[in-house]
Length: 226
Image (cartoon, rainbow, N blue to C red; front, side, top):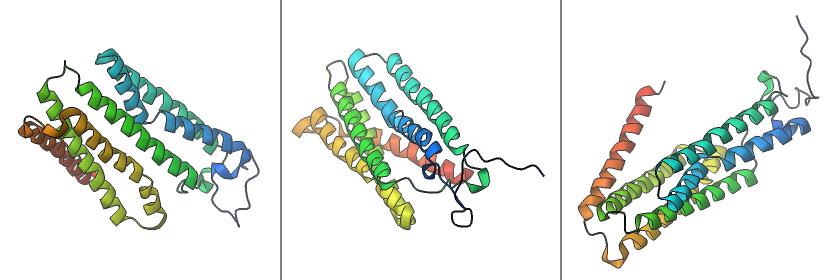
């Protein structure tokens, strides 16, 4: 049998059978780098970058390229650093289920909320430009309102389903849900003011389309669930 040479001194397996990169000075730095890169290039950040480019350029191709580049290259780099961090620990001793520190998870939830709020408000101001037809504003707002409803419903369902540490992790997504709801309120005021939408039916059609898409995704998950 070949002996396994450990790259670093691991804690006594009798005391700490499972080890996390944050337990090891050599692995801590690449793990933090991976987490930071993942947070700075997450899908919400990519969407925000795309919205900013769209808001500034009034172009549809450039925002897609910018958002995809931020998410794709950033997540790839984050994965590389993740593998470097976990490589210090033998597979059988890796503590993959350990929750992140409270400050990390809370900071991530607050940052996500801020990014969502900025992106949604920018979209609202872009839709309020004279070159955007009223029907597009109403349909888009209806879809956004339904998406916000799905976010809140998903949060409530996960809070009811989980307990303990898992529920605590779900609560860290609460600022994002609050940001979505608040931003939709701001968007309503920007787009329609006190008069409301000119065609409520168009808003309802947008909401119905988003709810149908959400239902299709939910059914797909149930069908493919092992």
